[in-house]
Image (cartoon, rainbow, N blue to C red; front, side):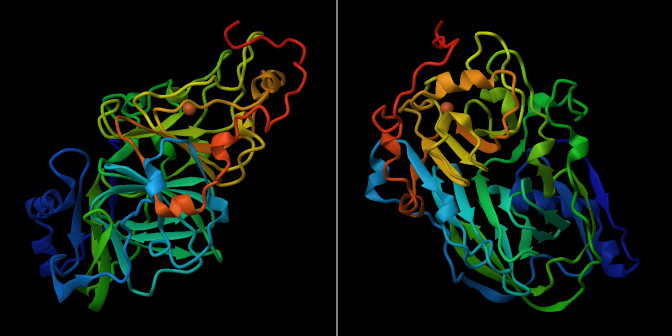
Amino acid sequence: MALIAKRGTVPPTPHTEFYAIPGVLALEEIHGSYGFSGPWSRKVHVRSYPTEQAKAPRRGDFDLSPSFPAEADLLQPHHVRTGRMPFEKDAVRGRKAIVSGPRTTLSISKPSEDMPEDTFFRNGERHEVYFVQEGEGTFRTEYGDVKFRKDVYVSMPKGTTYRVDLDTDKAWFLIVESVYPIAFAPHYFNKAGQATLMSPVVETEVELPELPPYRDERGEFPVDAKFGGGKITRITLGHHPFDLVGWEGALYPFVFDIRSHHGIAREIHTAPPMHQTFQSGNVPNNGFSLCSFVPVMQGWHPKEVPAPYAHFNVDSDELMFFCNMAYEARKGVIEEGSFTFHPGAAPHSPQGKAAEKSLADRGTVSPRLAVMLDTYFESMRITTDGWAFRDPEYVLSWSESRVPPEPSGPGWESPSA
Ligand SMILES: [Fe+2]
């Protein structure tokens, strides 16, 4: 995304004039986290160098490294009922990976409290996108405040120092992490960075961080930094990390409402590439596509079967978070917050008579809302925390004996007809 944001003014002090030398700050960023490709931003600190530490680093008081049960090696589809996971701790300490691969991790966080005062988090190894299933509050970041609410994505680039404060008693996040930057699908944008006329997303609907007044404070400010596969190191800064008087560039956290993905409808089945919002990595060679299943009119062709066909993605694992229970293909199996994991080597489909039933939905608008992620050449594994909240009967949920067959409705034709 070529959108450029610029915030703040530099107060007239000798310190800021020195620190504002663009080359110095650009090098700091490039060598810090972001490499020589992709977006970057230039920051202007009011007084202190961001390298200053008041204490030697130590091991954090929590750990986000995923563990795996022996059953993770058994090939089968999984259904994790994240709605049944408890609300607990804060947004980072309560984070539980539910599936994880070498380059991608999906976690659930259901915080019931703010992070401890004056403490911060920084994911030093993976870019993050939060999807908000429930709750309101603020991601306070070095780039400024980002307000969140139900049904928005919050993009938090790798290396961003932030904390999460709640305005509601609790919140519920699906968190996607990738070693690669997570950005809008590049084929939606022209070389000037504007969305093309066929794009379901528009860059003007991105919500930018608001930079509050800088914090020029001395003290001890812990930053819990994640690296090395989920290990946490506590870095203690000698000054408040939100000491920016301004920044500019194309790397910054932002909010994007899932309903700002303006779904595309056509007379026959609309396949997942038309639902894509974000992608990560060099698709389709690695990384993933992240899709938003928003309400759209279902196919209206007289022979259209709105339910998807049986399939498996030989090079992809398919991960899906259901925001509500309206997804027709799996009605009766899913609940709010259901998360399904379909490994690339095992097919999946609607169950029972879902395809026949879906004929009545031709040309209607489904109230479905779901987030889907397809990996490319990356096998995911269910974690211990995912396994603990699995639906143990899921692999049998396609069984005809579990869903009593119903008489075919008028107009039924098989998908191959
Ligand atoms: Fe699928």
